[in-house]
Image 1 (spheres, helix red, strand yellow):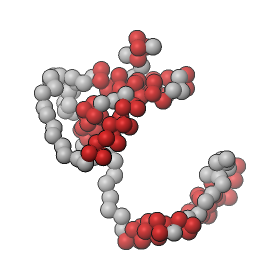
Image 2: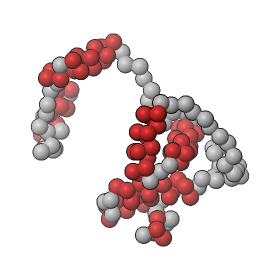
Image 3: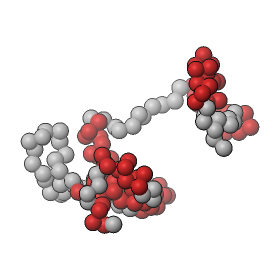
Length: 151
């Protein structure tokens, strides 16, 4: 299977996942696709030339965070260094952080605290459409035929 990994890239990952549902294999495909271009340009300039990896990043994190992250990354077959490289590539592609960073408002903070203090106040749903009907009741009648059971 190792010979096949180099031929599979992100555009083919979805098809590969259907054929080979093993999550670790898909992680290796992703790993291979990212690693195959590790010397690729890190700028958006299509004329820039590949550069050798000579930059260093030192980051201080808690030992628990480092251990937990390494455990997850190890299960995916990706080293911490490779994960950081992937993150930095996404920063370049997005021209910013590749995920939203927000401070919750006072109402959200209060709801989170209340849910932590008394989890019984949380609502449980039996279908995917049920919470949607709570959020958008006017759309719930249009969704009746799309009811997806969670059980």
